[in-house]
Length: 95
Image (cartoon, rainbow, N blue to C red; front, side, top):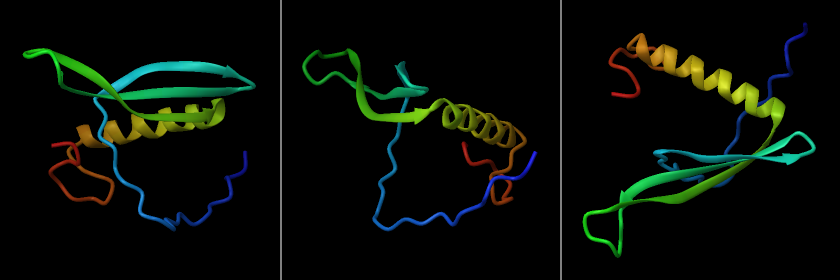
């Protein structure tokens, strides 16, 4: 198996971080593409004492990209459980 071609990662515009609490749905769009809907949990605006899940992001990706993403997430969580982050500082990125 050959290594994939490594390309530079560039950010030509400011891309904001989006905090998510979880994934609400993953839809099979056909043609090997999937749509993931992510939400953030917040206090309900109109119902005192209740919470709601607000859609904050949707990603559409190929099955291959989804599999690669799952592997990267699993690896990052494993590293975080080892109490180190991706650049080697102790303390963990998720604490």
